[in-house]
Image (cartoon, rainbow, N blue to C red):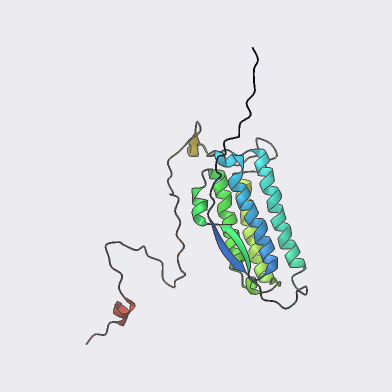
Length: 223
């Protein structure tokens, strides 16, 4: 009897679809910083630890810290060369960061907690006044980035540890997973972006029609 080998094509399983939001920023130095952050966000979503609900591999943790240290170095570099000549131009650089809804969809509680603070870091950078400059990074703006980075470091140390070995992987979260099964989703997978408002944002009620501005109580004239 002769055993034959049949060569077949592998079954391709489609990858994940990651929701991102496209932002534009003028400051090319901050754009480079955001690119490092965007790659860290995507990398965290694709690590093997994110296939679980509350476990992280030490090697994944070390990779997270390595990429995060690049972000810190980008900030240091931007501060040191914040007033270098750049030429006269007006460009808007595009950067794609994961959406808050994508953050809510993360299944691993450790990973999700880290990504939440990384997402805030991105929002802090995008909201800086220096973001509208060509290259200059104001010291007050740099201080805000530094503070946001401190929070990220604290969150990473708390949830995923240093990754030095299997004992240094952050908090133990037994309530988020058991025997490989996911516990029920309690915070949904939805997040809504609201416009800035002077007043506290209120939920829209389906059974209450919106009142046109012309008929709002503040503008109704009493005769």
